[in-house]
Image (tube, rainbow, N blue to C red; front, side):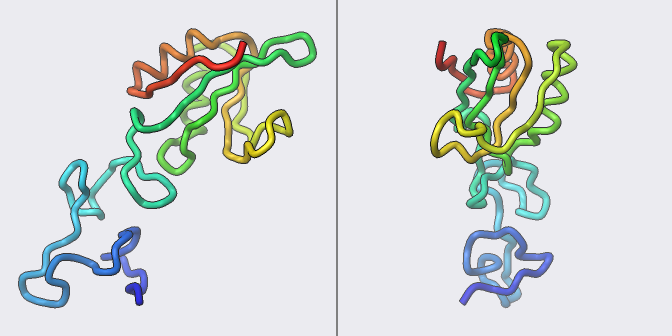
Length: 143
């Protein structure tokens, strides 16, 4: 059975809290990316607890026409590994536009239940440039 969550083993996906657990030679479990102990690690993690770097996320930026106006929609960002609210704030101030983080895509595409960032206006090229500067492998999608 897995260990009960304690401050020492919280968020650790393995069944053991560390190498040689319970002995004088015990070592903490370290991050596979930065090498720091899990308690000190700041690497972005996905919902499964593994390190999820920006380049490993499949980000798509598309523009949609809604009620005669364009909307830029950013999908594929993991909500656990990224601070979507902070990203939205940065996009809104950088582009001088409004926007929101919404759950799913309001029925436009079936199966979309992940949070997406919606920005008012056609800002696809600027968003692609900003995401690539942050290390994301973003691609343009749609029309």
